[in-house]
Length: 317
DNA sequence: CGGAGTAAAAGGCACTT
DNA sequence: AAGTGACTTTTACTCCG
Image 1 (cartoon, rainbow, N blue to C red):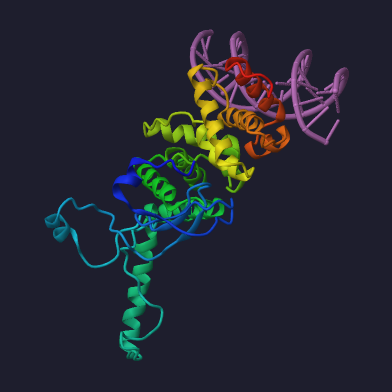
Image 2 (cartoon, rainbow, N blue to C red):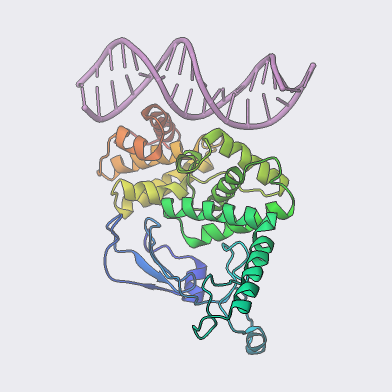
């Protein structure tokens, strides 16, 4: 698994392997990603360090001229701050920039400015909407340990939803949670509806409904989750070796070729393949263990596992 | 206990009325 | 908006080694 590298990683050379083992999965696949400015375990996806420091701009420069033109002072605009961090802030202290007290006349003036400032800043419905949504997106993603990439996608989609006036008649929490679920799937680090619903204010059904609403209205099509995407996470939770995981992925690919995965829940397929792979590799796990991390029942696991053996002509190992 | 399998209930989805 | 039907998953249970 760890020798699988994407083209992106190769060509941009923006990642560097680090020493040490991941505290979550114990594998030594910790990588420093200079582009996203995070330290992440490539095996299980756990984000180990995420710097606040602004390293990269949000724009891209394709040559030196463009770079000169686009460079400017201040940090890059961030997606997850509702006003993109550009709003003015007025201190509550009655002091000037040198720290001296203000004259009574000045104090009154500043008080008036503060009042105006407050009302213009927050009376803006849209900004208030966005800031509630973004803090919800942030809260859930840090609870689930999702990388910043996912939050940014969610934030972008949410902003689009607000611009298209899709929130009216729906709860901010509901829609923001749905955009986060959407972002996970788009970023290929799937979380199930349950996993996200559990740490949000909405239940699974509501979340699914809102997700469908958003994808329909914004014309977003995301293909069904590929079971392969679950192998890394389930595999690390089960402490399986790289060979076993590779075997599981291989099994899933063969199953897909035989078209026996269509219409089935991807978590169940992943569970069945992982269980079979663990048996083949002699790294046995019980059906219950595997089913539990995949959030399916042992019956479902058995059904997928049986289909795999039948279709791929594998004898009971 | 782990595993295999089954029937019936429940749930989700596409499609119709 | 409720109903229908094909299909998957879960629940609950039995049997085996």
